Image 1 (cartoon, rainbow, N blue to C red):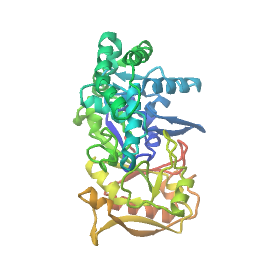
Image 2 (image 1 turned 135 degrees about the vertical axis):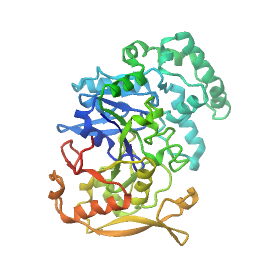
Image 3 (image 1 turned 90 degrees about the vertical axis):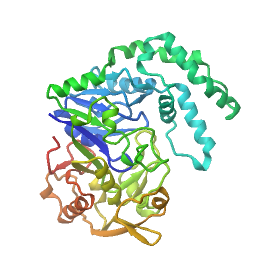
Image 4 (image 1 turned 180 degrees about the vertical axis):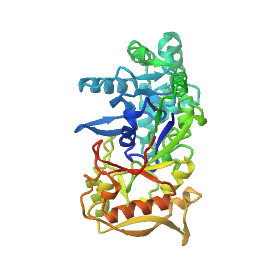
Length: 426
């Protein structure tokens, strides 16, 4: 049975939770392998809306939810989210957390916010939740891992080492008060005993499951074009949400991955700073935002909105070796007479049919549009491709041609059952 990776094919917020939820009842393990609570999945199950920030969407079905080593964890947020779900009758008792996952400490959030303010117009547009500084400490070998909470002496030593330089920066550069290492350690230790029963060797658990023929779904946060190596750097996240990140972020080898499903919205959105060629800074953009309820699950920030960019999705499909594309929010495009789709860029008078090589050229890219016929029929009740209006079918087939990957599923509404499946995702 397969290992399946679900990735965002644009700049995040594509509706990955909806796609993973479709697979959920046939999946044994659902794994978050990157990012932190800067990401979010919104799911509607039996008419109830759930906003998940750190927990895998598998927490809402029968699969075993896993937070793997590639994730950075804010323990306070984790337990708030668990408590919120428990209060709504959701069973969270099967959650597994990697002993090697890194912890977001209070000082990471402080550093995130003061650094963004200091950057001014050069800011990245982070969520201010400490994700970047936590990953920086991880790379600088100053990080605190989940397993460190169970050795108080080691934990206190690591907190002191991490704060030695940061306190100098806070006081001398940012004009802030120093952070007390002992207080930070106490706050982290307060979570240790509750966390202990959840902690496991995730690498062994997942490989054993795959050996036994079970289905493991790796659920990416953010998206390809926010990847720290392959995204629109420096306006990216601090981890690797690409399909390859599922291997490093969980300890499962690449030969274990059988299918990669790219999730793409039927138009395009982005949160934070960075280039966005098809962005609409007009009434059309406002309409897409309002009709699509384009506000961040985690931050509540307005999402920047624009037309579908085939070059962005094609690049994701290529780099991640996508076997399938799941197209979400197609229903939001109902009512447009003509729907523009970006099929190329004009960069300083030269047409390019793929993403520009440099960030400078991408910043100056002007979209070249192809205009497809729209539809007025309500598609939210459609459950098969043949039920979709002819123009809707044509729109889907044209996107499929442009991105070079088959479209296997289509979201036609927010609820779990509002899906049109063209091919089985397993």
